[in-house]
Length: 458
Ligand code: MN
Image (cartoon, rainbow, N blue to C red; front, side, top):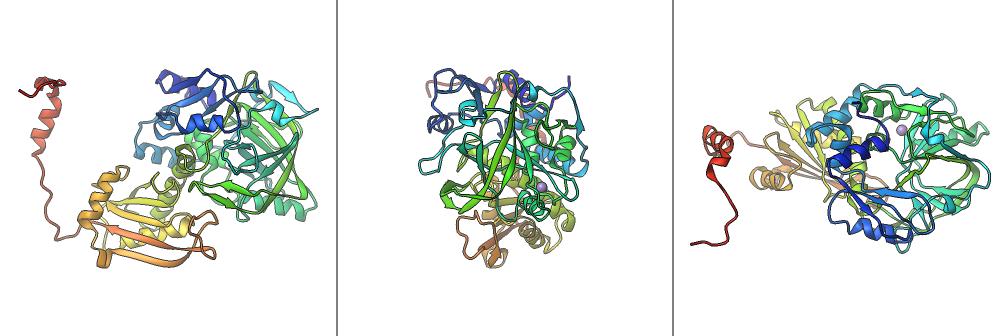
């Protein structure tokens, strides 16, 4: 059986693994979809069968570390996900065009009314309106023709108008400027309802000119199948649930007001560009995929899993003993990295810290440990800090380092950054261990102990 590359292939696997929950009661898109996902007691995928005012179903919580592993048919470990995403970075596979495109089952080019067609949720109290939050935006460099794929929030402004959020340093913004210099307006395809691997690839921190769809292909082990646009010269994944085609309205901007960020607070980024929609195409009976933004785990992980893998890839270029990187959820899925090193030489921990800061502006705390520590276990990492970090010499505080505009403590574009070197010392006390053979025997013969729940102590 092929692993598949569509959201539906992932949902099929997740259903078989018992990772789906279904909301059968009616839910309103204004705040209620958000409130249900925010209070969902586990990390199952949540399917919303009935949404007020819409005939489409919705799906959220698709990306979680376990869900990702099930969707991609890999082991549910940090190492496996790092390997999986690294394979995409190192061995990208170019996408292919296909005529067989479920995302074009229904094509609407006249009388477009996004609010009537899609169940677009409003998430937070003071935000400007409903947002499309789990979309990928595909565009082509107007000079080189090279593809770029990114995730951008889309604020619903009118029947065929969306505001698109992006920072000035964003690749898509650079392509928009290039188009304007050539007297053109940049065309985009916006795909909603994608396989988790495609979503993580879209978040990869790679150079302009690198096609994130080729990274997704490398991750999935097969070329991503794309469908040509109906009204734009931009392809979208043929198996996407919904595709919106649009072009930038030249010179038009919208004052967004407050918008939530990954740190769970509102920010005001000012004005952002406006898109005019030229077509909406979708599958028969599509799923509208959304991510609960702000300080919620799916938002953390979509960025965090991409950041940690590209961090590892880049740290290894200068610190070859780097073994794994983990971006913590407590650090907002963006700001705190843990790096493990295999038998580092003196000073390589510090080099890893510098490499991490050099690669990603958002990262502001890097903890470096040995590879006997499971870096995705916060207790083990804290143990390493307690046992191995000598604060007088292993703590690096570097003030005034360039950061991202989203950083909660940003001050003139900079923030103070912290490196914590929690590496084993030559003269460290030996670890107290139970003999290996006894540990293994007990594990192997676990049933022999007849361990059962007890309701008395006498
Ligand atoms: Mn890019």
